Length: 263
Image (tube, rainbow, N blue to C red):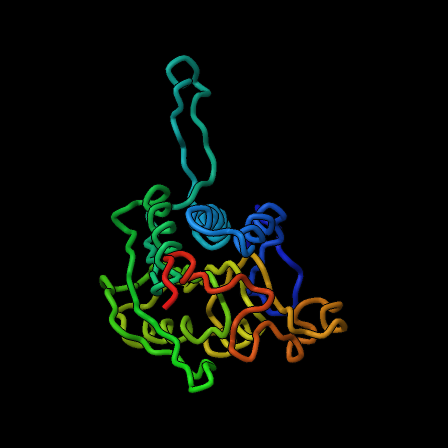
């Protein structure tokens, strides 16, 4: 966990990091308001993912010591700064889970290229779809086409997926990477704007090695008594989804809103 960030106190385990940041919660609250549409919607998503990626870089990426000659070195022997910085030689892969993950993954890809060695940065693309029954309830996920650019050996693999609802899609994609993609990743990290107790439960069960970073925890269907408790203490009684598996209070379908596509 990063020493530079503040996190929500909870009982979900050491791999779950929920940022306790008033600025980010304010911006996310605006994102979820009914009145927020394009182009403001995507602008806020970009802002939020830049800060979320910062937390992941600080908390999960290796550092190295550097000696940097500054402009003052020409006039002073003390013009060399020494300190710890991110290790630019860290390979990283960001995975675009279509369609809500397209913009977040692109933001992460661009900023990783600016921060680390771009020759070691890659963006993959995976098409996922919810499978529903006749009542509209989610009963599974389908992995369609994918564009995966090679091995993940030694890489930190990021999944920037805004809404962590049931966890079905990201769990399926991680299984695919572990079973079908060459190489052993150094870490798997999910970057979510909103997560639910149900999402955390499924992922910690199916992928206990997954590291989760999120801005907000939504458990709006829980009883008042449960909401008074520290998150995770009465985990089995916490509810963050409707019967149709949508997050509450949530913010609606972010994939639809990001693309102005509602079918």
